[in-house]
Image (tube, rainbow, N blue to C red; front, top):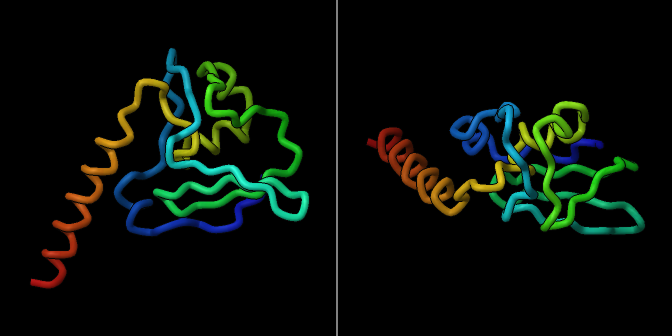
Length: 114
């Protein structure tokens, strides 16, 4: 897996890096788009703006695929995807996360401007 873009620094500072939670099951984030270009596969997170080029990783990024915490912990690539918000707990309300982030971002911008 090769990092193509670091993503948005404000999003990164607010969301941080996620740790693998024991007993959790993970799914692909609703914000992740998979794309193939010139024979290479890419994962792009439309929320964080982070992008990875997939280089032969042997895991399934299908929307309905679920991973156990043990499967994630046993794979450096899956652990990185959890940390970068590409894989999220299956019961995560991502819409709520997005709305909360927008509120925090607006508040930070107001404090900076005035």
